[in-house]
Amino acid sequence: METFDYVIIGAGSAGSVLANRLGEDSANRICVLEAGGKDWHPYIHLPAGFIKTFHMKSVNWAYQQEPGPWTGGRSIYAPRGKTLGGSSSINGHIYNRGQRQDFDTWAQQGNRGWGYPDILPYFKRLERRIGEGDETFRGRDGKLTVTTMDWNDPLCEAFMEGAVSLGIPRNPDYNGAIQEGVSYCQRTIENGLRMSAAKAFLHPARKRGNVDVRTHAHVTNIIFEGKRAVGVRYLKGGKGGTPVEVRASKEVILSGGAYNSPQVLQLSGVGSPELLQSHGIEVRHALPGVGEGLQDHYAPRSVARVKNIQTINELRRGLSLWVEALKWATTRRGLLSLSPTMVYCFWHSGETTESSDLQLTFTPASYKEGVQGQLEDEPGMTVASWQQRPESRGYVRIRSADPFAAPIIQTNYLVEEIDRRVVVAGMKLARRLLASKPLAPYYAYEDFPGPKVQSDDEFLAAATERGTTTFHPGCTCRMGPADTKWAVVDDQLRVHGLQGLRVVDASIMPRMISANLNASTLMIADKASDMIRGKTAPEAVKFAEPA
Ligand SMILES: Cc1cc2nc3c(=O)[nH]c(=O)nc-3n(C[C@H](O)[C@H](O)[C@H](O)COP(=O)(O)OP(=O)(O)OC[C@H]3O[C@@H](n4cnc5c(N)ncnc54)[C@H](O)[C@@H]3O)c2cc1C
Image 1 (tube, helix red, strand yellow):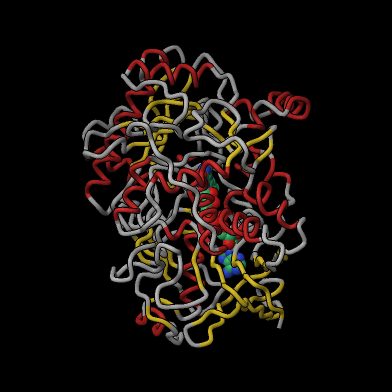
Image 2 (cartoon, helix red, strand yellow):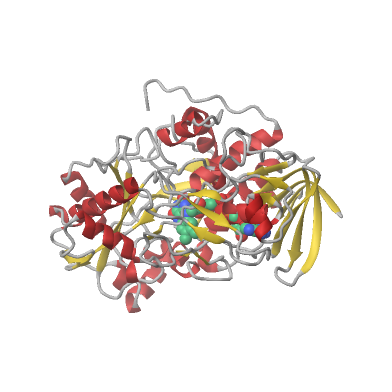
């Protein structure tokens, strides 16, 4: 059996950063096991390819969630990257870190070293920010390029002016001192191409020679000796493939993402004894929090029909598309270089006492049944709105002992009343934004939820009918002190009660943050790499005044 120092399960956002950082020590030998294939497909790299990879099973786990009590009986689609770079290879490119308060809350829950001043240096050291940004908050020398949306579109400008007319100020950098306001999106796109975690971190790491990346390596379980993780079993070639075992002399690191990390733990006998026994799996280590606590952002998409101007719905067809293709080929700009969202707006619902609790996005395009993936034919513009820090929690549980069976994903969107109230407030704000005076020259009429929807109950019914995931699952292997019932890992990301095993990915978040999750997942992995290597953490940032 081959032995490495570290075996990393999953070459996604977190796995890519880990491979890079751990590989900086030339003495370390690292094996990265990825269930998906190489990230060669052009649709991964072309930003507008998002709409294609959204359903492309060769690079996407393409899960379905269980219908929830507030999803109108619908099973919501849950795409997840299954290729080098993981979800960062199929995501919407948005770079959004979250608010100071998000991480301070993690620290307040007993997680030492995870407050905002502690984690800010990692955000900074990871990024190569091109564009606006105060040096207290932004990094210029990292490997992850972050640019600002550079498409001049009168609809985006009018939307932003509309926000200003409602008292929401323009914010030049929502990843800076404050998040609130309306801004053009910051994206992980460089020179018209996607900057995935694989591109920024994994591929450069492979060139060093001590990182062995194995694709089509579907991990079935972690191998234990007593309470110590000593290796990993996988099927080479995926389902029906050859079983292979690799040993880890130092550590096994699980970076399978918020759905698959708990699944791999449960398949390995780590989790709730009742769940494991119900599937005939021997309990290696009872840890009831595994898979519990799932959170995600739930977004209804409000749509208005557009007049007097072309939207992306028409630009992506016929001659216009050819013109755009030519533009991309010659200048790397235009429609094909765009992320699916262009403007961000952070504001208050008035329903909670916390800082801005609403995130709204604007796109001069609209989607069939409000789900990203298929553009409508008639001109449209969309405002998606969601509660930044929902209270509702669900779970991820294995469906069977078969490692190829999709896990049961129940997010329980909107089960907490406060979430319903904030989502309704978000839809009302979306209506006001779309109907604002600066957008009036282009605004034909509201298509969804439509003018008949007026009362809170009617808005809620519309949200139930059409809300979708924003693809931000987290919190399924939560970080917390050992004496909490739900915690799976400690603040060093070591699995409670076991040795030689850490979980490092979006699943360790104890609570949902006010952001899309790629930036923070990269940060988590970078911080974890220092812990694993025994390196002193960078000095916490000292703010001259409250940020
Ligand atoms: C469609 C979509 C749009 C998104 N848009 C944005 C956005 O615009 N901005 C943003 O910040 N975030 C966005 N996200 C979310 C963000 O990309 C993820 O939160 C982040 O990439 C999660 O990183 P991770 O390391 O936790 O998991 P992942 O990046 O998903 O990595 C997990 C890896 O583990 C592999 N794996 C899983 N199980 C096994 C197994 N059994 N054996 C071997 N390998 C396995 C997977 O194939 C995958 O490569 C989006 C996500 C999606 C799906």
